[in-house]
Length: 381
Image 1 (tube, rainbow, N blue to C red):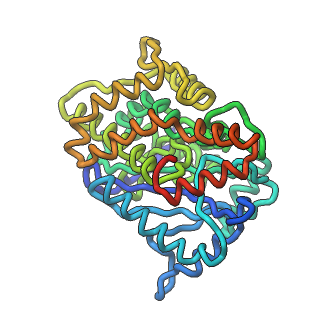
Image 2 (cartoon, one colour; image 1 turned 60 degrees about the horizontal axis):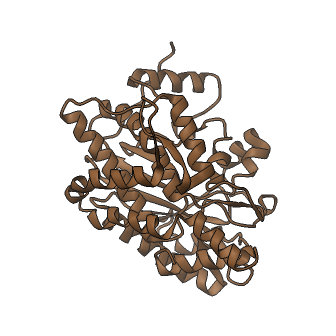
């Protein structure tokens, strides 16, 4: 087997960072506006280079706000809020609003412009029709891992909670003006890219190195960050990065889902310290759970363990919140973790979006207006 050394950066245990992809929408029509470059030029530091917390993305209708390396989810959320306020200084005079959901309810992918950057041009050239359709938005959570040997066991264990995170965050029921019948259409769209979707469940680091060597040898990827798995090691940050969640419409949900992810990683890390075996599920069960949570969201019956036991996802989440409460206390994110119950009470974003559409005779511009209002309010409405 070919091998390629993959150095894993040093990072503080359970340090945390958040990345939030935001759509730029017209204040009047609710349709997407291609003004990302205007925003990025306006916020660029005086000395040049990229803004540390406001970044470009694949499409010119999108900016990404990112936190620094933080000790708590609360600190990371505050970083995001500051970045959003800086973006609004530019977007408000342009009559552009910020919005987030896994997909825009009615925008047409054929009308979106790709950022002028070689890596994006290469992606579109290779992936063609599927790549051009990546009109999707997500939330990524990075959690620091102090020992490389923990990365793969924790990553595999996180897949047992994949459906919990995807169901809670599901926010992409509409695509191109149609109700898809899915809670998260984004999940199934994104996995069409050749190196996206669920990760392989490797047991040893040299197996991951062998995989990457094979992918590079055959020209599938040029560098590791072109592996776009739902859960992946971030080599340069020394973290596990989860890319499971649909884009959240408000900061409360971003930090709640971030806290759940943060606590899960620390929980599994502590189990390893005690010499305990981490939970794991067969790849076919994980794949089925991804489909069920994408299709049914908060109504999904999910597979909870390798024995094939099943449970309603909301019951599984409630159990998990109780189990993780002491971990949240330790990580200083008890309030944020408890806010997962706000999603359980109010419904996930896809449910709220559909309710707005029903109240407005199916008008999806009303759904955009509701998403914009939640972004401004910082909480589900």
